[in-house]
Image 1 (cartoon, one colour):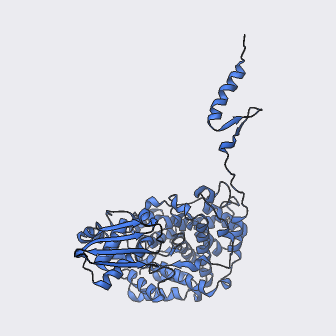
Image 2 (image 1 turned 90 degrees about the vertical axis):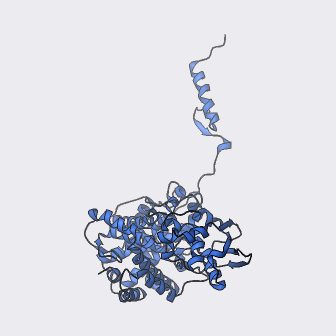
Length: 490
């Protein structure tokens, strides 16, 4: 008679779920992965965080090439303008009201406003104001808005401890360099997963820039970057709401907090960017760490910054450019337009596919509204992405005639547009590089006009002129905080 022990029954029954789960029972009774379910181990990468930290700590203003310094100054000027312009927006009012009861000492200015806040809250609020119009700078490869997380942090810090203009500009460039290199390492997969890279990578830029001004040593900078890695913020689902501006604002204050803590030797892992359970492996399906560490001090992502001529998502800029050109060249009457066909990059519909935006913030992520308002009003500035414009019956009627078609051969700064009128006539425009791109950049004069337009109605023209002059001359300032003080409302 066959005798079966209780132990053998238990082992046999245990092997069934293990086998179903892709495991086999070893001779010792331990579970091990079977060959079919084995996955390549994540390569072990070392010293990415430390290499970057070492560079940030050692990099000097005198090391910056002239073109990088110039782009840093342009980045500053553009950011101050959009921060002033956004200071009177509802989102900024709400955030100021919400945080006023909890603010600490009045250490730092709010650009375009009278209130002063502690540096952590000031950096957050100025970051919100600078992004609420979606009119700020853009690193096109990653679609990071570089200044938003970086400048508010170091400008607030400069009001608490004086910072010479050259040191300030050096920190700004290093912050931009840090966030954009880290963004490069995981783009576009990180963004495609749903992350808002301005918040998730921007926190590193803020930590690096603030840490540089606080004089962190290499180990402290490693910790600052590590603490920043623990604070990724921002999901693309927030686009079209006030929440989107929260992301760079929080990245600014989180990065500043990281640097302040690290300065007091608040520790972190030394490999928070590259470790198997670190930032890059957790937040992206692809990592290219050479983008972070190669060519430090030789090639500069900060030199590749661009500035928006239109107050909306940058992926719509080629279509707006084409629409305005066709309107102006042919004096197109909007009420005679039967159809607007445009071939666009896949990211356009994926990011800006809101067909029926309900307010100005949603309009900034509607290719339908952007094209329609450009054809009706011949512009795409702050006023064209207001609640008024989004609810205009003429614009609503025309946006129903906008037909975007995804074409993988169309690059991110291109569009192919054909407008057909009711009488059968058609007009065509192909944009190879949109205005505001690296190939067709905004001039210094165009940036000044943008600044003046944004400041109009917020601060007097003579004050706006003074602030612009301070930005252009930042390298000669004894204290960069003069910019923040001059930009505050009297």
